[in-house]
Amino acid sequence: MSNKFAVVIVYFGQFKKSISLFLSSCIRNPDVDWLFFTDCPIPHEIDLKKNIIWHQTTLDKTRALAEEKLKIKIPITKAYKLCDLKPFYGTIFSDYLTDYEYWGFGDVDVIYGQIAQFLEKINYSIYDKINWMGHLCFVRNVDVCNQAFFMDVKNTVDWKKVVCSDYNIGFDERDANIKFLSNGLKIYSGKWAADIDIFYWRMRCVDKKTLHFLLDTWGLKYAPSNYPYQIFAVLNGLTYRIYLRGKKVIREEFAYIHFRREIPILISPDSLNYLITRDGFIPISENIFDDYDAVKEYTIKYNRQENAVQEIKNFLYQLYRKVSGKRGW
View 1 (cartoon, rainbow, N blue to C red):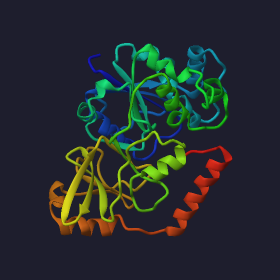
View 2: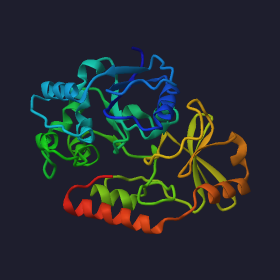
View 3: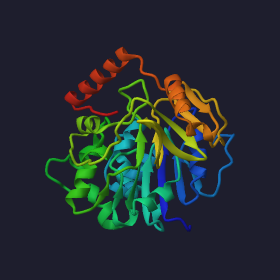
């Protein structure tokens, strides 16, 4: 093991159709080891590289391991409940993470750019945790950081209640961070991901107002602004939002794009240049975004605003979850 970073992916059930694109983006990040714990077979169209480590297991075996490491009975009946356990992966999977400087957890509905390159840009080593959200974050692999999620901190839910509840309470994106900061640890919450907002049909980034509404925190200092003409793309294996500002075409790079909803796959897994749109993953040539009119045309075609009624329904549903205490994405 020579990599500093490892990401633990725990997934049970049936992979989404986009899993091959996700795995291809993992392979393009050889400086990160991706540790899978899953009952899913390896997709036949993917030739796994040495940085993808596949552990074939079951939900029952994973629950047993979690109970052994956390020393508490855990009534996991649905795989989605595992999201609440993500901050405890450093303890649960400690035997697999011994030699890494940082361990992480994440989702599979994402496409990665160059993670290690982005970590260097933000000077990762001065932070104890990278990213507030649960779709990809890293935690410094030392006891003080791994144990912070278990601490008793005022106005946060007790960790035993988190693991013993039968529904997902969003611990990994809410109280886990408060506990972490309350122990004097440092979280990077600047530019990191293009996190697509599920409130809208049009693909746009989650903004500050939405984050504060969902997470009940003003600790997040950054979220991308949105523009009337914007579109999301993978260009030469890097992940971008391309938008028009004035008469200029702006390429804004992110560590990855969290696209959330399943969309038609119109490309091969090894594609390096494509759009990520509600109409699907669309093949393109890299140089189309050098032209202002072309960007505007593609935005109008693939990232138009529609389905306002559905957006209102989405918003009301999230409001209900917030008020009822069963909040989530």
